[in-house]
Length: 99
Image (cartoon, rainbow, N blue to C red):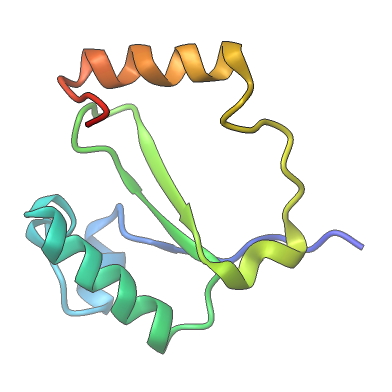
């Protein structure tokens, strides 16, 4: 049986206001957004988060919490060379690198 993942949407003004937040929490320093993710993990029964990318208006970011693991089937892994090359291209475009 397949069930939809429930993701906390942090992309719209209404969704953020419902949690008493604004875009500064999502697009602020990484430590701040990490704290927010931990808080949502502890207080909401969601499988993860979805939010707009800080590197491009068209991009969306998703993180899945461990509680989603029973409902997710991995179709690509970090060892998938083609996918890995795409990840590196996006990182380069955003000025990021592995360190």
